[in-house]
Length: 279
Length: 279
Image (tube, rainbow over all chains, first blue to last red):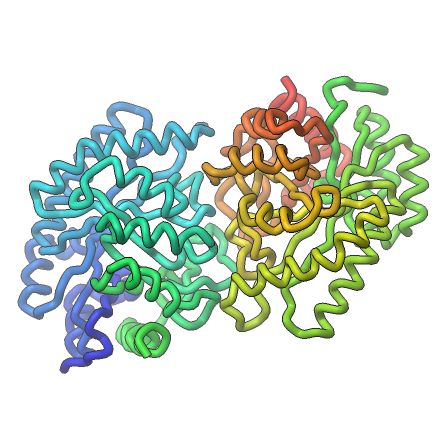
């Protein structure tokens, strides 16, 4: 089956994490979905080589691998372990045939109040990993997360901060992830998308909608496209005006979606993509 | 009792909402606290004139009244009702003897995805209310709320946005609220504080700490000073460098604090203020 409206659609594996990798691939083939964004943990469980063969045989593109990062530790052993793990993530991305590794930078170390220092340690890590990624044909995509994650997940809260980091390195080594969920509130984000595009640094574009009330811990309350406050076409317009013509991944962390039949959620997500992004 | 270390400390009523107004005033006198930030609803319940007499007789300063705002409705009747309510809030502030009314601007109307339009409607409301506030000796203090409230509470998410709005009006009519809880993640906030100070627009300075995990709905998880990720002295330094020498209010919304004895929480908050802000 082919479906022109889904040409740029990619389903991030986390959106339908209740599906096994073979179920995910079957579901994509049935709907005419051509791209998947994968996560390290389920890929490792299935086997990296086996996953690579599964998606390659199905003709699916792996649009991103999620995720590397967590660069903010101060302890030297922790830092060395994080760098080694990120090299493995780059290896896995290369094996899977994707050119993009999404990075979630990490939060404040326990007891620290030093956001600036944590951000600088990210730059130190990128300086070590950028050349290694380049050797393996993989680009690093710093993802600014919503400011509500600044202390415990990601000290990079805005596209401007992500670009300030990325621009210290060549664009084919380090760029950014543009994800509507994290930046929709930011009136400076459109100009930062233009900046990112001008530098060839939009390495992936992801969608999720903003719905309230947020759940406890604020991790798993991302909205299905069309259910929330974000105008998806507007943001697609910004990245396209900035020159981005690549895949558009839908990445939803949502307990209610995870409790449903995964094939049904996959079909719904593809339909919402057509309705709210393409048409 | 006097306490020089508490000279600039003001307790926002919401921090100890379990206390009645007379209990709050007694607690302040006992500890040597000289300022209180009040909220409209408990003041109305006790009586605005009665509250004014209570705090005046105790020699307490009312540092702010919280809160006006909610300016983003599209429906003309709703907008007229909001403006009328804000005029009453200005009257109440004048009666209470405070010169500062804190404004929480309001979220997106139901079904709307238009952040820009909502922000413009705030400017329209300020144009009507600014002169009325000035006539009553009251300054309006736009409070940017953390971006996690952008859809349902406040479309003004950064100090820069708040100042873009405020600067359309004279500083003695419209300025901003600087609250650490809402802006601590923002690396551009220090320069925006400098901008606000240069324009005479820091109308109040409030403190709360950032702790995780956030509770469901993310309203009542503000941390006691010292319990979280924010360096309070650093932010005090920014506002002082910008010329602000006024009261410093501690405003905590926290279910655990509310479940405790209010006098004990008041004493703890004053002690934390001395430990984490003054010493």
